[in-house]
Length: 176
Image 1: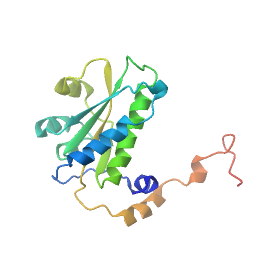
Image 2: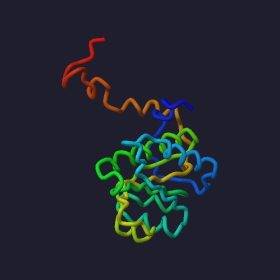
Image 3: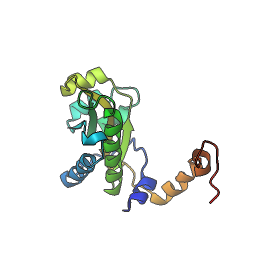
């Protein structure tokens, strides 16, 4: 799958099959995060792979994260506040987005989760204080097969580029 196809096909998946994520696919997802750019090449991220059903169940108790208990993999994206106090959030989110696109290209679904109990997850996963939990990423095979044609149609519900882009200054339209 080409990168742009993965961008168009990506969607938030909140229902997962119980099929495990193969190690080679998970390795490619993690490698794509590792290869992400970062300010001054500090790479201020750390990713915790959670596959244990009990831990995923506990993490799913957050308001908008109920589906984590059925997602076979949860990647907890942490940023190092000490090594990169100004850029750890941005750098970690860039790495996580690389992972999302790679997972999509591998035929997997993902969902970015910003609703979580940081203290509970920190304690559950023994995360040190210098790391901030930036986001969680559910990864697995969608319960229903992805219909790429439907997703292309769905992409029409996005705001048109003319509404979100200015040229040279705010509000100036592209005259090309």
